[in-house]
Length: 161
Image 1 (cartoon, rainbow, N blue to C red):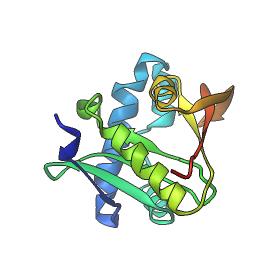
Image 2 (cartoon, helix red, strand yellow):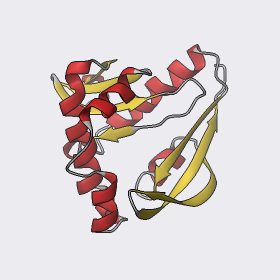
Image 3 (tube, rainbow, N blue to C red):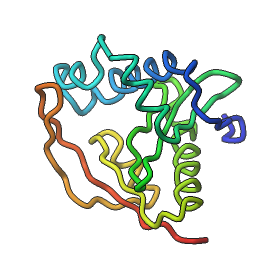
Image 4 (cartoon, rainbow, N blue to C red):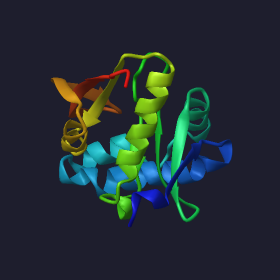
């Protein structure tokens, strides 16, 4: 698959169900390599609050990646340079979708005059981000829905190029 086949567009409210399915599928099928079943179900439960999730992504720039009209991934950016979410459908991992989404996020951050991109990433995603120039600030343990998770705080200083 050629990266040129990946189309990035702005998130629309009608994308919500596909976004949740990509999120849930990515966590449940890919992150299970590094987290327990209990952790996975706390992170991506069956009963995701659709209204809250929709509001979350409508309140900040969120981009959708599509291949031939199929929703394959998404990413967002908060005003201070925090990349809160980036997930790729399990069947499209390793095809450049996350790389293209990250380029979109970085370009948007630079366009907003931000000098730093930062995020918290899973054990599973950490190598991807490190290969793309982000550095680990610290490993941390966070508690979410009653489960403890190890993840990494990472950052990238953005050049003005």
